[in-house]
Length: 192
Image (cartoon, rainbow, N blue to C red; front, side):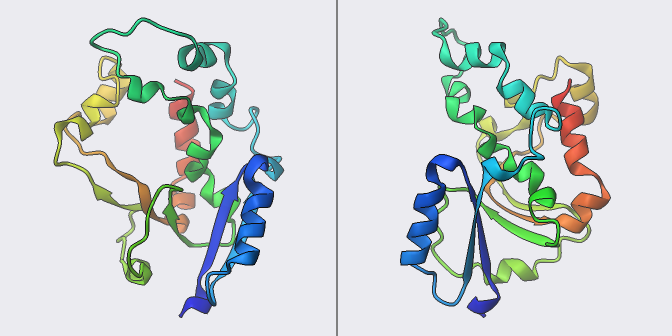
């Protein structure tokens, strides 16, 4: 039932007006569209979010924007400045952005939908917070390629051979998220 679907789009001030106008001119059938401006989330600030504090730090800007000699251990893919956009971290604030929702199908802006996603809503997550597609085919998708296992806290809490997942499409159980305080947990890891 398309009329039961609501597309919630969160963007920044630069793209907000264009997004609103595009969806007014090109409505998605019977589905509703809600476009929100990230910059109107006054609660999402550096005093609440360690990520925002880090993103604005001089060392972070230096890492992403200054020229650094590359070596064998440096993968430039991870130094892409797009990673310092708060839009890349918004998924960790979904319960605050959508306080009345219980379940969210999250799609990144580069996901191309090729068929009906309705069956995803009926997936029983069995108490899990996130339903996602694993990406275990290649060894570079293992946690040991993303996390610093020389840190004893990381070594204690994560399996280096565990698989990453396709970050661009996730179904989140926001009731379980809230129950387990995932945003607070995310903040605690960001503060390390």
